[in-house]
Length: 83
Length: 390
Image 1 (cartoon, each protein chain N blue to C red):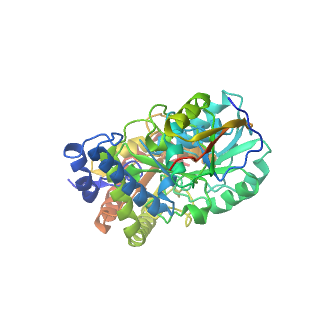
Image 2: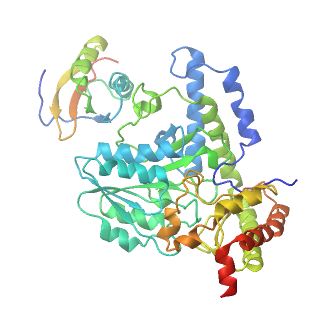
Image 3: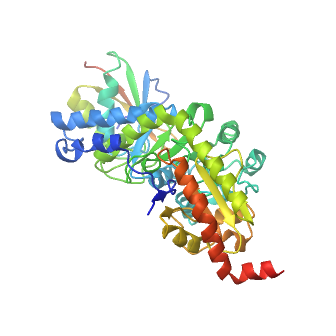
């Protein structure tokens, strides 16, 4: 698992307090609004997302860039590499 | 025998239009909205249309509405959802001393978990002084919950002023608007509230459906865990017929609000004036002007409200002694105590809540029968006899 610091994102998806498996549904929807090469930041307090989101990125052909930690959530970064 | 129903704060009749809109969703369109096939997604679209209608009634955006099973669940979700989501920020909640039990008991639930709860006092009309809120807010305060209008005494709180104080202090503000939505204009942007609860039962929708407004992007810990219905914020297969009924009732409530207010205010004022004129030793509770149009509440000296309710029922008049949720508790109303009503006088509480189908003849009937019932009960009352002798 790659740790990133001060990663800049083009958009943020706040999934803190939202139920599983929303972290595997909403990023796909949100990425539709981004252009190729842009970065999506996903905020979540669900530990399982640390395994699920990289695996989802691999399946969907998107690039998982890494994650960072905030006071009350994880921040995961996905670069849109596929339309 | 006449039947005059004046307990609309407890439950309004389901509107014919709402019932008709609901019926196909019991039989023809019964599919689960979470399914991926076309019938499921069509029903999901129907739910989203109702979200628009409910949002429209309170000036919100559709994505800011979560459907719940009741106003009580909406209140629970607001308080527990915010308190759990923000517990790292602080452990202090402020509510008023006249909140509905769903707010009161949700706040008390957190007292068992190292939270502190401040209960704000009210004046003799049931009004919160905004200054008392300013003084009660601390650095660790995360949420303030003050009802928009009180269901027992009808008083309308100054929620715009109260929410502005919260905003200045970075505290979230929730209002229980179950008694106000559909009776007076409610706009989440004008009032500046962050969360607002409403219920179908108050606006001609069926029981078992309500909604919580939450300002966009506000984090709320779910109370019901499970699937990702309501965008992952409230689990459980949606009550589609109920939601359709709520949507229809909300649409109609918005269209009819102005006419309804005028109609109810006229009936209410006639009822109040008639009762005060015909019955000695009666106190009109709540604020005389800042109150819900169809709400008339009294404390009648030297009698028991429950006995009066039974007496009125025998002549076809249906009213309440206070909150429907607490009326069987045989306990003096905390709301009446909070406004300074002596406990013996509070026993004689009676609440009439009118609805748009009520007419002048209903008020006339109450004004004919109520004084007789009061007189009969007082004749049996040793307290009244003592007073009369004195």
